[in-house]
Length: 199
Image (cartoon, rainbow, N blue to C red; front, side):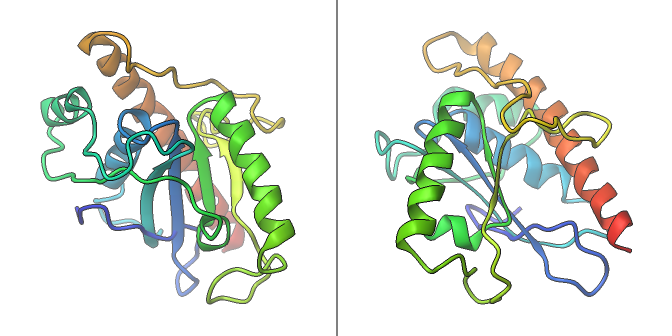
């Protein structure tokens, strides 16, 4: 697992461009780095899907350059994810043009991201993606919009939220870990189904 190495994601058939995914919470020290680490771990086995950038960020700048919360790291280690490293960062305008998918942990994060996406499109690059010129911007959804069977909740933000464990105890991080494993698996299944459709 490459430390803090953004990767690209699209449901890509063989020979098509790799996929990039950005996971987002409020401060980028609890939920989104845990989601990033779990997803990296899940895609570490050989697959038809190719990824370029997997990363995480926060909607707020409260913890920029901080390491993930120690409870996040101990929960990951407890489940055998031992090589993950990350320095918190805030979402940037160019993220909406650099990533295929931006996945929010809760409704507040999603609202902030959708607002920032509109601003980025109004102020920025006229809807052009960096480097590929395909005119696409990131798909912004709640991570919980992707269901276990690989289907997607119709309404953006209509899926389940991942609650912030920051003010609770260590057991809250374990609950979030199990939820993120399940949601990450549903998202990966969605990508696999999309790849099959494209093939």
